Length: 263
Image 1 (cartoon, rainbow, N blue to C red):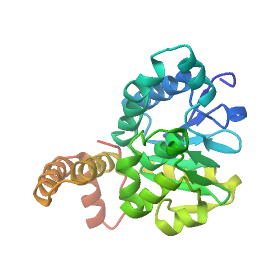
Image 2 (spheres, rainbow, N blue to C red; image 1 turned 120 degrees about the vertical axis):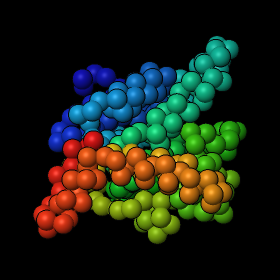
Image 3 (tube, one colour; image 1 turned 180 degrees about the vertical axis):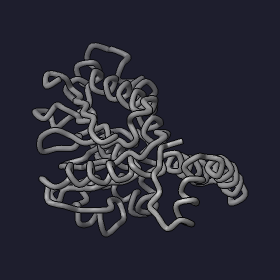
C-alpha cells in the first residue's frame, strides 16, 4: 500500500492509520479525505479492531488542507472547495469522536488547520517534542472547521483557543503539554511506538465501557447537568449489563486480573 495516500496496519487489536503524503506534509486532498473517512468508518465497524492510532508519515502529522489543489479548484469554479466541510471534514470529525473504541493521535510533527483539528478530536494525544500546533485559518481568510471551534476550547479554554485562532501563532509541544492539549511529549522516534503500545493496552481493556464513556462525555459536553446525568444513567445501565462488567467484578472479588472481551 506504499503508493496510497493512507496506510493501514493491524497489530494486537490496534489499527494504525497513517496519512501518507510526506512530500506534501500529509496535506489533505479530496482523495486523502475520502480515504480517511472510509478507513475510520471501517475501523469503527470491525470487531477485531479494538483501538485506533492516527499518525502521519515523514516529518509532519498533517498540514491541513492541500492549498494547491484547493486553489486549482477555485480557479476552475469547481464547487468542491465550498462543499468539503460538509462532505469530508464534518463526517471525519464525527467518525473520530463517535468511534466506539479509543482513538489516539500520534502527532509526529507539525499539525495545522484541519490536521490539528483531527488531533483535537481524538481521545488522547501524544506529541513529538518537535511538533507544533497551528490554527492558521485566518491567514487564508477562513474561519475554523473540522470541529476545532468546539474541541479546542474544551481542551485549553476559550481564551487561549481564541488567541490561537485569531493570531495564528504556533504552539510548541511543551506549551501544548502545559496547556493540556496533549497528554505526553516524547522524542519524535518514540511517539508512534508509545501510541501503539498505549492503544494495545487499551485494546485489551473494557472496550465496551470505553465506548460508553466516550458517549457520555460527548453527550454531556456543553449540556446542562440534568442532561449529563441522564447520559450517565443510560450508559451506566448498559455498561452494567455487559459480560465485561460481570467478569471484572468476579475477578475483583477473586483477587485476579480481569480478562475483557469487549462484550
